[in-house]
Image 1: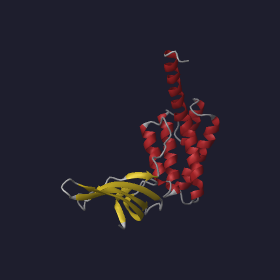
Image 2: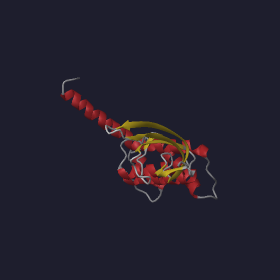
Image 3: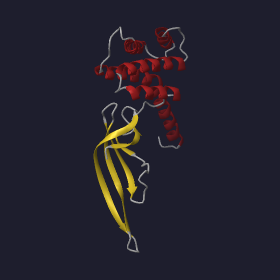
Image 4: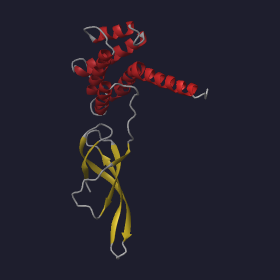
Length: 213
């Protein structure tokens, strides 16, 4: 077995046939009452993504009754499902996922997409202004974000500009954690914190209503 079937890398989202760099078979034999038997079991594959070079580990169930062209249903064991920030509107979440998919492939593209995500946040929150900088200041004026986060957002904007224009410079992998931290700081303040506060308030009301506290 040299390649997997067409599948999506859980690190970068690339869809391709990955190289199989290791496998283990957990085989079982079942004997029927008439003396006939068949094999079945679970196969574990270690796959290497041709795009980001990271490893995916999958498993699938099989039996010798299956046709040789059977498409197996992969269960991803590693990496686990990504944890996305809570409380994001669908459009913001979609944009966030798009940025995460290219993070390990092209840091410049990642910076550009996080800048676009920032613009979407401004538009979602009704920010006014004909530039991103003005929209950020407007959000601060409306107390949507604190003044300190305006500086954070401006840093994210600058990284996005550098990613978009080769003449300014070239981003490297060392900037990925910085860009990611800036992005998360903004969306967690705007969306996740209020979302968790609302959940906590609802739970407290339920507990008080039930006489528990």
